[in-house]
Length: 61
Image (cartoon, rainbow, N blue to C red; front, side, top):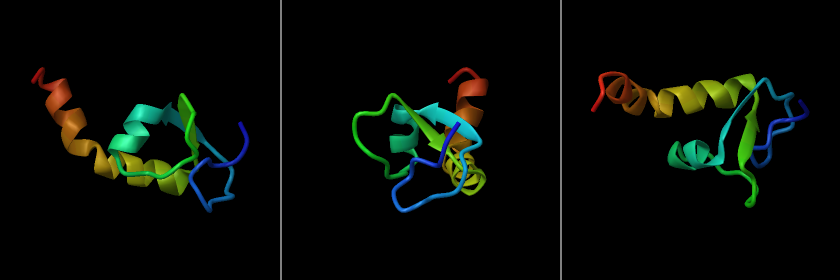
């Protein structure tokens, strides 16, 4: 999959998320990407930042 695409991170990527979701979570990455590959640490940060949105979405609100 390559390396994490968050600026100043060189760890191996494990997951990918949409660029729109990553931007909403406050992660900084290079412009022009449709999907952002994240390392384990940045994926955890992404999940923490989007937890409230995911819970509300699962409730159908």
